[in-house]
Length: 214
Figure 1: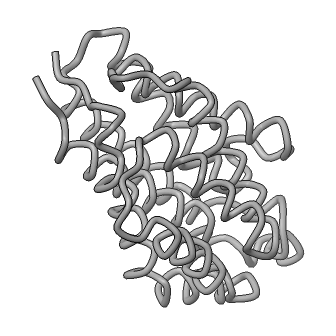
Figure 2 (figure 1 turned 60 degrees about the horizontal axis):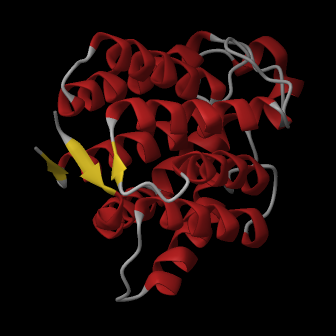
């Protein structure tokens, strides 16, 4: 059964940083259609600050998630700092300095992030937010953990679930945030938070697949 050593966190965290940096303009463009257009800039600021803070140092996966969450919570504006800070820091807490990240543990970690998020926001699936990306990703991991699926394959499934969740927001009407004021006019456009969440989860999964061990 494949596992990830918690000590191998650095390449995973850097993959997440790079995904946001590479998509800064795209996230800004998506947000600009029904929001204020600063999502890419704010996310890039937070993730880049974390990358600079990490420097050449090593980090465990759980410590890196906590440190990244802390930077986002304290250093970027708007609602996304507390949202992503909560998700990542609650994921970290669930790992509790485990030596190995197994599929069941990773499933529990992501579920803890979603639970923490739902404790600070009212949005649920169908409200055109990042919950529409995160929730199906959690469901996919939970199902594969229960089925005993290979970890790498489960990560592929999670990436696909996140992608489908992100795409689902295109047909939804925004219930929260600046876009909610547009009502029906918010339909037909991706949600920026759902889009950044998809990028983060897919980069996280890619990074993890690169360090899985048998």
